[in-house]
Length: 556
Image 1 (cartoon, rainbow, N blue to C red):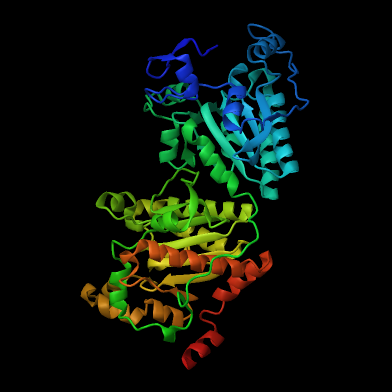
Image 2 (tube, rainbow, N blue to C red; image 1 turned 120 degrees about the vertical axis):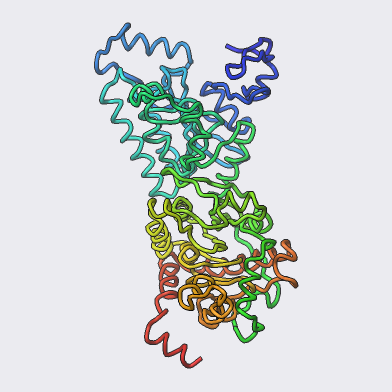
């Protein structure tokens, strides 16, 4: 056991660390950043506010139901683990607060038989979930496990179902669940509650997987990469939402917990006069081809620019959680004033390197599936959804088609039609075809004054119909893709005026205008119930192309 006056060797870089400095740094090596293992009690102490910890006792104790004996009897192993850890079982359950926000935590201790899951561990995880349900507060599960407890045979296996059922009940109740993955997390724990939570956070370097490295290498008769199954490996593949060092963990958890706190009643700031225009006759005519050039201006504020200036406490959630990450779509939880929201948007980038990394704002299926996950999270937590559209279109590559680009877009469109939450879309630049529509099935669809929205790019339209890409300006005019025409066609519900010189001239003013409009729009949508929100959204899109709609457009 480490004390403040001892020296310890870092198992990552083998540097000698003074105990007091090591403890102050939360048992993270200050030289190489290696995160050393914590006991369950140490983890609880690091997570919660001082003086807020309430250890919760539940009647759960392992039994030798199989009368198991390997090199020693199972009861003897249990007794040794209890003496070594000071725990009755391999999970410590506690209630407490993080920056005053309530939380139930179930923390696994790897020192108790390698964090293996048996009947008592499953019971404690389930009891923690039931306690969170009863108190209606979020649940955090901190995992550290080698997998199933073999000494309990099929009873251990059944805990995967039992704990999964407990998390399903929290889903049904709209209660946030968070998994904190620590090293290592394998087997039945990885294949159940560790990866079923709404948000998966991992410590740097933490390993997560079903089968262990040695088993896989023996099976495939090949050596695996050094970073295989690490948090960084998984994050790159979209399988976890974020990596947070211990020093940043409480801050990230605070932002996540804050979105579960009901918004205090109060007046929302209103947009300035004439910022939102709903009458097309009040807008100046603009040549649609010029509008396209404006919409594509590289200096226009991006989704992340708007998030930085119009929102606070943004915590980005990466990955589609099934094997892909796409940087052309960003999203996460944030606050719009005092209102918690989920925000999603296309992200083009600005520098050459960022444009390349973000695929020029053209999402792959992983991007749309990430967006779909966030939409479901917004509905579960009953949070308004704000989307920003700025894309030339979905990425038209071979791999995108192999991974189901059309299906991913279709999933988003269908999801948005039926979510019982307020939804607002702002087209901040270019809205290209179905790749834009996948984020634009909202109660209110708004567009920046110099934004455009179309079924196809003018260049594509010109190449197909005129057989000449140089006819793009003519195609743009024929497509009527500028904001004024879109408002006249009722494709958008309002146009947000831009600062003089366009949004690219003043990012702060542009974001302030968008924020004011969002506040006012969400305040109006607050008055609608769940069914009314869904019906209003369906009523918004149903008339397009109907006989009545055609008659109304002819008379305009």
